[in-house]
Image (cartoon, rainbow, N blue to C red):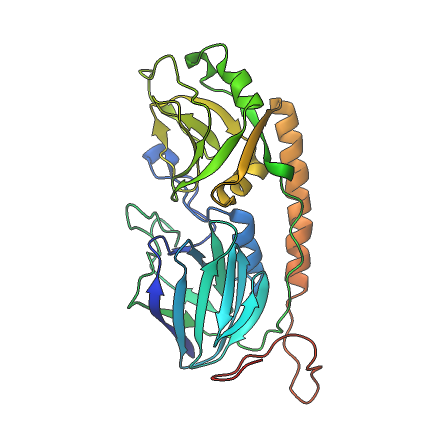
Length: 332
């Protein structure tokens, strides 16, 4: 069996192995985890032939040296790659030669993904390689000095730019459904939530994303603990909003004034710090319709990505003006 080894030279504090998630365990206090930006993750693994796992990147990025065998990789989300000094950008497939140095950085966002054409070797917990970062369970955190193994690597995928994703919320407007704990707020809280401007902050991790703006102080915070869901807008005693994301707690005592609808959750989590945020309340029926429509658009888009995966042509037949080739110690 062939393999590629990635020797990690440096890595930021929130670089982890993720697969699609760990559903079905919330009643035992275990969140689904998985990628923060699920659509960018799905694009990355689909572009490499459907490998189940990827590395999730966060600010600080990651640099590795490819050892033993070359390997193709897909880079999506807010990540962009530089291979042997050549900027190959993001939302692309590129082959990393043996001996090459690859730097992956976050650009205009919070979360990026790199998936490899092969099987990423990592531990599994409760049937999933998704990493719960605080607990350290699952595929694990990727740190400087580690070696990541890719089994059965392929290097013969054509270098292509991936098709653009379906539309995300325009102009920082995010749709949400009111509740379930709006009764714990004063009568002005919901109108303020929908009329004021907020800002995506630099306070974020895999549990949630801070959103600054006028405080929405709850009337009380001593309500019974209840189920928490991804996308909930949780408000602490000082009136600060947090969007719950991949590693969110399964129950919580702080009131949740609204829940962002499924198609908009990951886009809000992905916003660069300082980006403007506004909220629009819609009905539950509208949320269901919008979610179903977005899921169909995503299905078509991911099918287009999978259909575009192809082998690189032999050098004698290749159109060298099409795509990018990066060799050890060379330019394009």
